[in-house]
Length: 612
Image 1: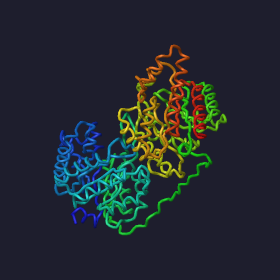
Image 2: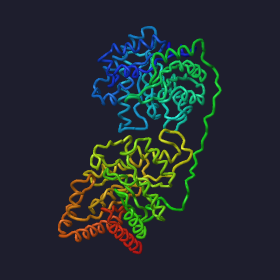
Image 3: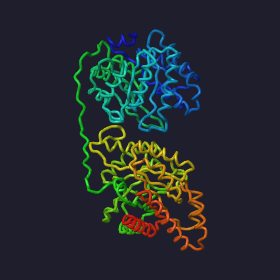
């Protein structure tokens, strides 16, 4: 047994606090880990200040010293040097007064970025080997929100070393991880995977962290750890500021001890004063050997959504030809034409009207508001709500989805969204906290009764999630692989960009025969030759065939061009209904008369096809 584990067997051990907080307070506003090379004396002073305050365990300044995070600062080629130097500095400070843990931070949170599992593993191994080669006393895996990531990291580390491994997860909500796993279950799993110490760090202050630990039993093999934040952060003069009431940690230290914690340190906002308070708080206290565990409050997620006999759009399209029409909400406040279009399309037999979410980055009346206006006016047609990643952060997305559920708007198209620079407010910021892949996955998590943070919604949502598909690419096979990835994330059906080629429709059918999710083929009636050229040359995701462009060019007046556009759309519909049940018609410039005609045409042709 290592010296550190021997010490934990008999006593409560105090660890250090935040490195970044002290560096930030001293004016450091760039990559903290780079200071291992550029200003090692500053890092040494921080380590020494924590040891002077009573820390018996310190961690290397390597939380983000991996290839993926260092790449943001152009330092990805210095992973080994930064980690090696960090261990040397920490060991120089520790001497024989403290143990040195090599720290490796988690990468994924709710915002998954676009980093693959393979990249994360490669990055983790590179950092791990650098720390082990330099001779740390143990490893600290900390701030892991994604439970799959921390399990993978622990298994890799355990296979490579017999040194003590401390494995800390982070919670958005007390008692539960972001994927809905209860904290007790998560820590038991990490114990079974070989962690020597398991616990929690970051995001929560002492109050909620202690509350979460009340449901955690003393474990079979592993000891418990806690590294709370100083408090909830405040935002002052452009900076995050944490509470400086360090003496509060004196009482908190006793509370942590009473929950069975044997390794206590600090995370964001904590300083040497907080560590000194922790040291004072556990003075003369021994670890507990028995604990009364409080049961987690059990909340059964029920699907109490109003049930109807109406099939979802995906289910309907599996059985019969189904028509969706896009009718954009107005850019102004006069909704009369829009509402006229809704009822004209409903009378024509559309199955759903899909409402864009500020398409082309141009402000429109909220699509959810227009969907409710449709219902209030007596429309029975299903609204399909577009939801972009562009305009809302994770808080806004969660709130919006809860609102859509409450309004019984259950059909959603999850999309990335057009970049803001192409719209009327090019200086507006784009959020993109998540990709359309992750948004789809998070929406399906709501269907399990779990919020983005993993906490209970108390009810299950009932969302059906459509995904966008662009077939107008050079390599359609690659695009279909992307489609399959969206299915893995939870997509129920697909709406394609407008297709203007019979051959493309047929090829898409050939490549998607093994996909059991409905595909709605995008059909957009052209209005003129100029319209055709604009779409072909300037709108992302649009590609017109040479034949279509030539036909539109031959039309000498506006009316002829409009009629030719409808005829081309009908011909494409003829091909599409031979291979797909779903037809998705995009209304051009609020000319809903053309989409009414095309909707009726679909029904006429499919009835004739059924009779034959």
